[in-house]
Length: 323
Image (cartoon, rainbow, N blue to C red; front, side, top):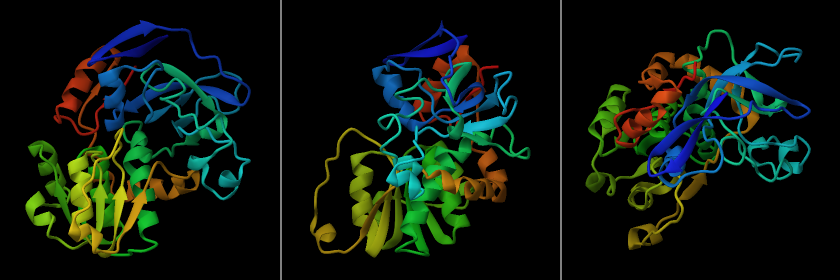
């Protein structure tokens, strides 16, 4: 089969590799669609030893397997289903399953024709959800909605600010409105993405005005220090910040307005497997909006160009479609 190799500095080659060999209690999945993610820009820029790609939809392709032919999405944390966290339903925080391995990071992922994954990580996709939309059940809806659910323990409604209108930020705009928050403001320097956020019902805001705001809920979806700084300034007293964006380090200045304020900071890494059915309902409820996020597709030979456009902010949620 063929798979993508990330060499760094934006260089991707498509190379022949051995077909995956599933271990006991695993299955081979033929990839139907693998969505590009902002976190994948790290291997795109710096290289990665493993096949990347972690927002994967496909079909179990293993004759003789009980689920052969079933359409699935791939839940990326390798969880043991035995530790205390798994017993409490926190499968995404499992400490007993493969040393916190993630498919597409420490194990081969979806920028390939096929991959192997544990049976328990293969979540069935209903017939009414097409391959094109199925990957959105993972990061775009799953991680975002989990963060909002965590924040709802302390903030149940009110105005919201989304920092970054990439795929996670746009997913947050849709999820927040569906979960009863509003009005929802958004800040993004890329005109294309900001316009899409407006078309989804958000209001475009400016950093200068947002920093003086009193937002009950702030979603930081960039992983950039300026946005993290702004989130701390913009959150209302006793409001909450949901931190979704990833980066290697933080550099934040504690200003007087931050110091003299009580607020909650929530981090959403991924989502517990028990959220999956609720995430399906979120996708069904706003299917027309989510369809607008998938704005390009390419085969393996077009993956490098697809990443270049994505990195420039010219695409929202493009997908690799190996077939």
